[in-house]
Length: 36
Image (cartoon, rainbow, N blue to C red):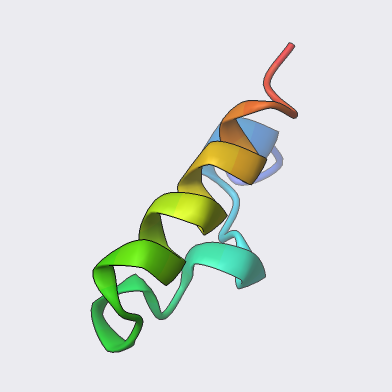
């Protein structure tokens, strides 16, 4: 599991708790678009 990309930390979303709601939603939507 250590090498699994689904379990890897995502630098872009590591600080969602420090973002405004708008920033967090934009960030999550951008990351969701990269899911294949």
